[in-house]
Image 1 (cartoon, rainbow, N blue to C red):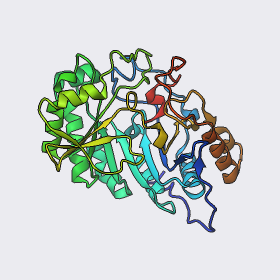
Image 2 (image 1 turned 90 degrees about the vertical axis):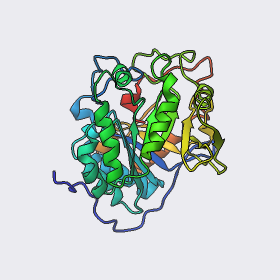
Image 3 (image 1 turned 180 degrees about the vertical axis):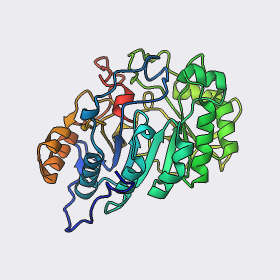
Length: 346
C-alpha cells in the first residue's frame, strides 16, 4: 500500500447528517479509533508482565475498512474529531496513510494521536506531513527507575526523545498524560509538573480507572484528584481556569498564576458523563458508546457483508441510543468491562 492509497475519493453528492445522539441529549462528535490492541510496553495498571492474547489479524479492521467507517462517521453522523489510539497505534503499519485519509474527509476533522511515544521520534515528521494535528504522549515519571517499574521496559529516553520530536514537527500542543500509582510515583507529581513546564508540554494527570486486564483495580489504592491537588499544592499554587470546560475531560488550572497550566482528569471521583461527546471504535470494528460499557455493537460483520453506508450509519445510531447516563463506578452493581483498556482504546 502506498502512503496515501487509502485516501477516500471526492464526495460526489451531499449527504444528510443525522448525528449520534443518545436518549439524554448528548451528541457524540469525538471518535476514538483503536487501530490495534498490541502494545510494546507492559504498564502495570494496564496489563500483566507477560502481555495478553492479541486479536487475530483477520479480526482487525483493514485500512480501507477503517477509512470507510471514518467517512461514514464524518459525512453521515457529524463526527468532527478523530483520535487514533491503541494498544499502541504506532505499531499499526500505514498510520500516516490513515491520518491523511482522515484529514481528506469533508469536512476535515481534527485528527490527533494518543501514544506511549515509542517510535514517535522516527515518525513525527511523517505524521505531521500527513496532517496530524497533535499528540498525547503517556509519561508517568521522569525517573528512570520508576519508569522501568511501571512500564517494565527501560525506554524512558525514547519517550523523552519522542516528545521533543513531536514539538519539533509542530504537533502542538504536545500533551503529556500521567497516571500516579500509590507507593511508586505518587510522591513526585510536582517534579513531573515542573519538568513539563520547563519543556513546554501540557501535563494532565489522570485518575487510574478500572480498566486493567488483571481486574486488580481498587478505589482504595487509586490516587484521587484530591490527593493530586494536595501533592501539587506543596510546591505550586493552582487556580481554576475561568472558562467553560465544555465536554473536555480535563479540569484545567493555572500554575502560579499562569501562563502554564495543568489538567486533572478525575473520571472516577469527579465524573463528567453528563457532557460526554465521545464514541469509541475498537480495532475489530465494535462500537462502544462508553469507555466503561459492557455491551458493544458490531459494525465489522455488516461492513464485510455488503451493507450500505446508510445501513451501517443506522446501526451506529442505534448503538448510541443505549448509552447510559453515567459510568456507574460508584454503584454497587458496577462491573468492570470485559475488555481491558488496551483492547478498547482511549
